[in-house]
Amino acid sequence: MVEMTSRWVKVVNGDLLIDAYLAEPVAAGRYPAVIVFQEIFGVNAHIRDVTERIAREGYVAIAPALYQRFAPGFETGYTAADIDLGRQYKNQTTAEELLSDTQATIAYLRGLEKVDGDAIGTIGFCFGGHVAYLVAQLPDIKATASFYGAGITTMTPGGGLPTIEITPKIRGTLYAFFGDRDQSIPMEQVKQIETALRHHGIRHHIFIYPADHGFFCDQRDSYDAAAARDAWEQVKNLFNTVLRQQH
Image (tube, rainbow, N blue to C red; front, side):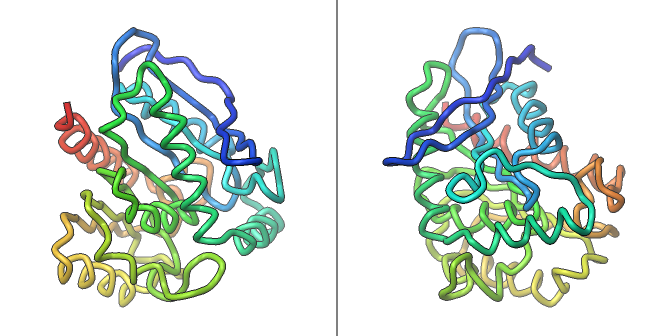
């Protein structure tokens, strides 16, 4: 574990200033970078904690606010009302804007002294797991950790062909994590994702746990400590083997 520091920053995307939570090692040097994609609940305490955990592993980590255009500063908890509001905001996002915001975040990272701009990965949860799969098509993304991203096989933010259709464009390595009791992602859809990844020759690994949706989040009732612990080890292995190889 390395000592890290964190702060809020602004990522510039044209006329839009995106709030983003940045965590980075204190020690001088150049580090791989990881973009953290939020759940529907905004860049809340859980997402900030994940961002800091990644920085302690020796990465520069950043979590951009995906709802900046229509709900700046939004973060919430996990009540039924919170879920309804988060879904309303999620439904206002578009694939085009999410790709654009990710590209702007990559440009921001490359402008930082401590970032090795050739070693960039992503991790996302819930809605962010879908976003992580979507932006894996960007050539700059070398490693993707997608946690229980619903709708990958059935839709894309803003409408259009389902996100699974971008699978042939993925150039990096993709790990995807699911719970077999997740009501929002039937195992049939997980099989479709694995089939697409295999068919297009994408380096990948699918992990399925005896768990529910949101199993990685220790602030949710669906948290599963054993699944979360194993998934975290797999994520560290992914970033260590793929992103550190770029050096």
